[in-house]
Image (cartoon, rainbow, N blue to C red; front, top):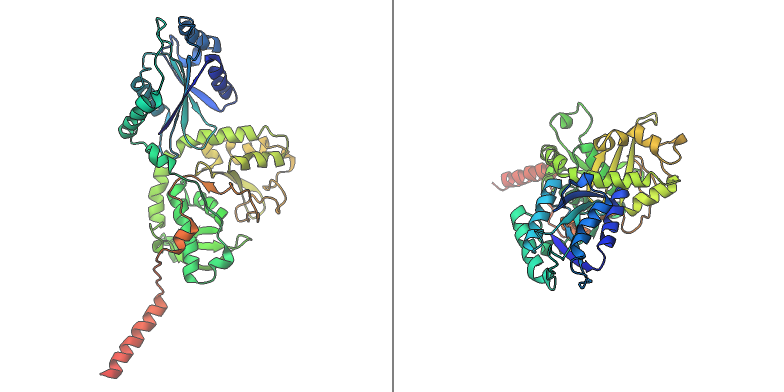
Length: 420
């Protein structure tokens, strides 16, 4: 957890900032500690008057407002109730437990975070000392809270650099078996470890961005019936190419049985990120044109993927949030985000084909290809679990080629007989 404390001279300004975020749908008031009414019944005037009742008791102190942010790692699973407990715990430990304060949850970033608004003037006019509060009290509080709630430590959170995870270079990857496996392994391990998906189609929606796909084989085939899984490279047209590799041969063994266990965990873990995604989508839907709609989503590293049948009819929609490393089917976010409802809300809805713009600019259908050049930050993904391609290329690779192995055994046996 990373805590930041900012002092100021206007509690009204701090309130305006957070309340405007609420009006835009970018934040939510979670708690109103020390207020006589519940958060949902408080007006802006009620909130301001509560603080001004204290600041008027000490008009000599001009710097009388505090704006605190508590920032969590994308890997921290913090729901509303936990955020409330953390806020209460933190404020008590820094000496503001008896002060009135407002806690807002913001949804305008990929990582979970809350904003706390309060004043440092106590009832009776006494000023609460804030000099070095960050170094002396806040640091101790955040360490205790990290340990109590099992949160990612601030030191580790600051080390969570964003790595550039690029689509596989097909020509380079097809140079040989080792190169192919290293390229596929790098993408698969990074995606499986870092993204929250709840089905194989959702996983493939993510993997296709990086020219890789997980394949169960044809329905009814032996591999399908045995729950086998292989990973393929995809060419620029979205077709399978090169030699596939078995899921069991990749470090971490992202096999179907193992993935199915992860589906259940991810379904719970991704829940807090749905609110962020809905906010981004709703905001983008206010755009006037599809081009503006696409640009708005790209800035937030969100991709919309339409699923079409052989007749070109759209039957499903998937939203990939590459910043928060989550993926949702439309219906999983709510009925208004299911394919038909969402399409009706899109800008320029009259002739939706499943493609937001001409193919050379942006391809949105599963099975299609990504444009040759995207903004550099499009594939930025959070968290230290993401590996650079060079790391994977240096990793020892185990190759298992059954026909070659059998030939070697036969040749060895033949040599032994000839020598005897």
